[in-house]
Image 1 (cartoon, rainbow, N blue to C red):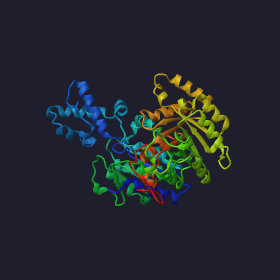
Image 2: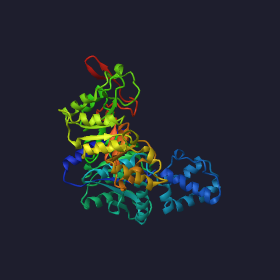
Image 3: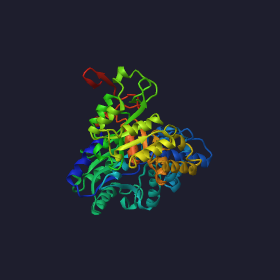
Image 4: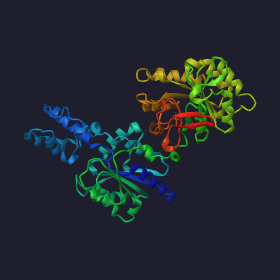
Length: 496
């Protein structure tokens, strides 16, 4: 199968170019396309065990289910369930699979699909529509369950953009899918793609007039109709990979991006050749010379061999200013270092507007005096501190955390930073946003992680920018050089 998300990306760009003034729509089927029906099967069969005090399905795993939801009888055969139990299990399945409780408890999205939907919902003049074979009477329950699973992804669905089958279960589904496309076209949307797990549904849509502008995308999950029904121009896939779809030009303008750890010549050269505005540099004192240098760790690694001579802070700042880049200084030491940095930034050739400066440091490093000193010197700069150790108390003592952040804000801190990979990261971002605090996510190691964070639109994201798909080869600490390794050569830095 070709890369269906890349096909979608190319088709989306083409449609935007041809119809720049129109509102575009991508349509998604629900069952077997957004929702993994295997989790519903597992849930209802385990409910059967609970209600009837049996143990037929206690060990049933989602990956054990390889049948369409209309063929649960085949699963019972595969599991060697006694024949005399089949009918009452099937009756229970039919009676319970669309109950509101089942929809709320058992709906689980396929990995990555909500990120794809969120990405399109963030694009200007683009609407995500739903075109489902579910009967109309399930409208309220469908919206309730989908919005419940979409909440963690900041995805929401509206009744206005949901088309449902006017008939009953399994009645004229393919015809209904074609009617759904007509409905949305008549509503003023230009439908450019449709994602469905049933080939027959895509075939019905492709018979419409003007169908050549609609890209049929087959979700290769579990389906009943034949693959031979697929339109010739369709693309198939089972993995929703956002980095295959998202382009750098589609990144939101209201999120700031920071290149992490621009502490050596190789990484500096890569950064200066990029479109990323902010460079993060780590500031500390050289133990031998007392000079301000760039180094992340307090220990002294064999940097001369791998990265060349340690860079001096003033030299790097001058170069960043010359390239009209913005500068984020991460203080690894406080006290006198703050005074020295402020003094350095006032020297001839070193002056830079406050809005292009960003200072970061742990509370234990900069302390109240350091934050206040930086705020007095640069009223328009971003001043930030990581708060990972305090977030641990967010569930148990939210008011204490809120008061702490308010106190830090009064000392000059304007943004709070949280490390990528911590549990409940996105709920934490939402909570801090609700409280009115600006947030940064740091130590984001790769492109897929980066795009996941961007979907939640914190104020800023600090990443290694080791993104080969976008021809960025940053060298940060997040992935331990998993993607790219730099070596220094006689004539400069090279990427090996």
